[in-house]
Length: 247
Image (cartoon, rainbow, N blue to C red; front, side):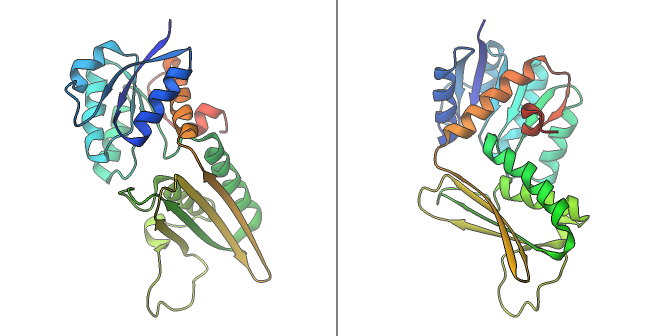
């Protein structure tokens, strides 16, 4: 029997792409689509699904989590930009519910996460670290969840403090770059689906790891893959690295 997927945020760019991905996959069916402007509500539709894929707004995620807990539904979260309280609610819910929560569901981007960790381990502390991302003009949060995760990986490997050592753009007389800072820069314009680059710069050489997305289908296919994977999982907080077996 096909896995029934409820798409929360169904009228957004990612919601439309996920519906197309479901339609192309014989193992799943889009049982319902819910958005701010649909007559159907999440509570009305959730009984008729096996998993919820949420690509909506960060402020709404907590209510989605609560509904999934109440109805015992698996959850895949692709929404980004959550504050500390919203993140805490997701972590708490994962003690009772299997949740896949990832900043990016692309197989290529998750390979970039893995390569970033390995490259940072190999290159050591001599290289300066910068992250650059670009998205379409309609994206509301910055930096992107993917760029933040890349910076977090850099900070983890170098044993730095993300909150303290990030430099979100630079302006004015900021002084010479310190060895510990990680620069992160967000560009917005046009219809760019998503570009991410990690830069390692040293005297005499520079290494760049990049991923450029030209279609949302790569993210949608990954989210559907995660919804299928999480069906047999015990409660816990998983990410796309778990889904792909990269851990």
